[in-house]
Length: 138
Image 1 (spheres, rainbow, N blue to C red):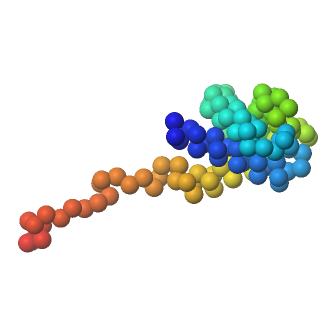
Image 2 (cartoon, rainbow, N blue to C red):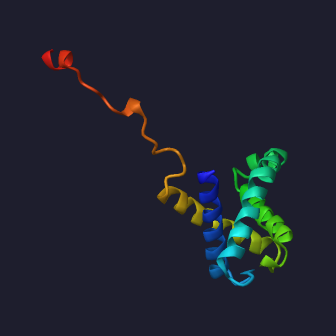
Image 3 (cartoon, rainbow, N blue to C red):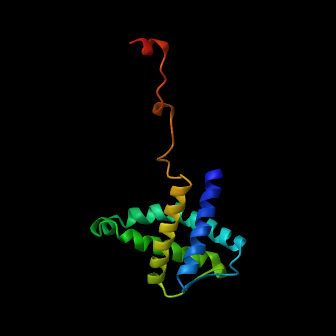
C-alpha cells in the first residue's frame, strides 16, 4: 500500500512537471488534489491497459526496436485525459501526448531512482559476510 501511494505521488509530480514544460497540456486548478486524482487515474490506466497494449502491438514494438512504446505511453496519457474529464486537458492530439509521455517517463524514472523504487538497490543478507572465530584462525 505504501509503494502504491508513493507511485501515485510520483505520477502526480510527473504530471505537474509535464504541464509546466509542455504548453498544450494543462491541469485544472493546479492544486494538489487534482494532481493526485489524475496521478491515480494514470496509475490505474498504466497498470491495467499498458501490458495489454504492449502484447497486442508486440510486432510494432519489435520492428521499431522499442520506439513504439513512446506511442503507447502517449495513448495512455490520452486515455487518462478522457477519463479525468476537465481535470486534465491535452490539446494537439497524439504528438503532444507522445511528448508528454516522454517527459512523464523521464521524471518518473528520475524520482523512482532517487526514491529507490526500482528494486535494484535492495540489500539482502547475502550481501554481508559474517566471520566466525574459526575463519579468523585459518
